[in-house]
Image 1: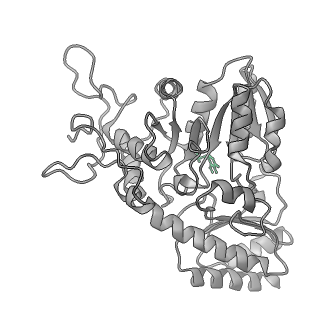
Image 2: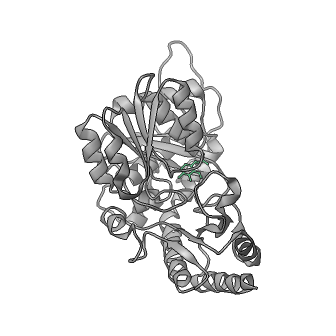
Length: 388
Ligand code: PLP
């Protein structure tokens, strides 16, 4: 079995290399003659452990060599060149989000959440309230969360927000939060570490669903927490051990393999999203086009000050539910499916879930890696068909 720890651990690469170089090499172990570049998944519930308990790998709920490599890779991408940063991978994005909120707070604490974040957050809020934690909420737009921070333990930011694509000024919110002793976590799912690096903007935690753009093939669920402070990280790691929300070695390995194409995938997705946003703005029946990369978008100025790329998701509104359904069924290159960030474009009428405050005709569109002209043509064709 390849042991990344025994061979000196995953190599940390210099911060100076470009994004693409970093992505293809992130988390790879030192080259060992006759060993593969990326060792295969290690399937083990337990590891040989004669005598005293010790060493890096003892039991499969606590550690796994395949996680070790993936965690190192994500740390390199989230915080290139930063020392002491660690990542903990989880079974899903929600497992990672819950791990931060539930391991860092206790009864009597206050947390500040966005009121326009991912639609499972309200369920988590109810759970926090049942545990005696006060939950305050405010919109992402206009940094509204900054006015309700007083005395809080943790601020949760989702920027850009899903599905509304609002953006807040992360540096500004971090400065206000830290001045009052409040920790800050940023959900970085939509941007991916190539689009935004929350720890460089001052946040304590960058948390994401790796199910989406990070791994990008729509074939696995994964989550992660990247943190700069060893004590905070230890609590997150312990939470994973207690709850057992671990990702399988196969998922971890597939995720790591996918990172090699992260830059290629995201650059194409960002280009496609911008082209679509521009096309949609020109259509009379389409309202409320949102894409932080559009210069006329409400969020553009703030986004440009903190994002390195604006993501692959565009949102817009068609006149009503029936119009939106006609549009979705007329698309031929775009799957009607939830989730986002995959190599194949997906779109959905978000109102069908009932959890987001959006109009019935609201569409969340995730641009994939198709040729831009093909994707734009497919969308224009579906818009034309949906008119009658
Ligand atoms: N955060 C955001 C912004 C999301 O969009 C999602 C899922 O859509 C999650 C977290 C949860 O991720 P997962 O489905 O991997 O649990």
